[in-house]
Image (cartoon, rainbow, N blue to C red; front, side, top):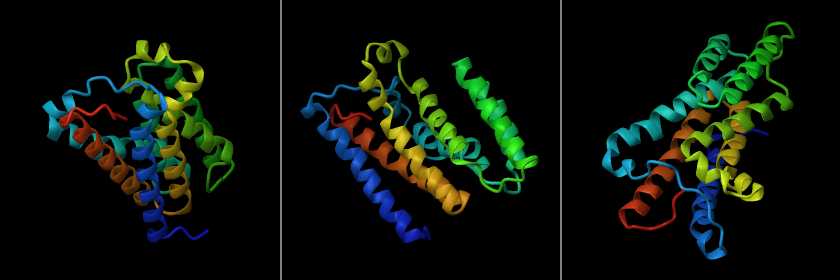
Length: 203
């Protein structure tokens, strides 16, 4: 499948509308999810929050979670960078899991001369990308959620991971990065509007 800019734009529009709509109708369906911690700081430090959410976070996450999915010029540097950054994760299990999958990726690229990682490894990267977002929430709030709702809580991150991984495999890294950044921008604006007008629709 040839994934051009037009198709990526269509995917983005549908994706963003789906996530916002899902979030808006959740209260009417009786679905109660956990809101991110320190959400009030978004308004208090608007510029810093914008830079962090829309520029820094996508760049860092794409560099360590998506750039190493295909063999390219700086893939080994990205794998080492990912291992180093994983030590900033609060959960040691996430750290060791990410180091392990990066080592597997190194072996597949260096010894088995793979051009693209196999689907099984891609899935591990997607799952780990979703799970590191646990750190955005108060862990005690997450603990009270039933398993089904806990999985639902991280569905937006899982869906984003699937889409940007697909874009990365089918096109260029910069397209995946731009998609992630644009997605975060939409969510950032939506959350700011909700906070500004006292709405409860927080992703």
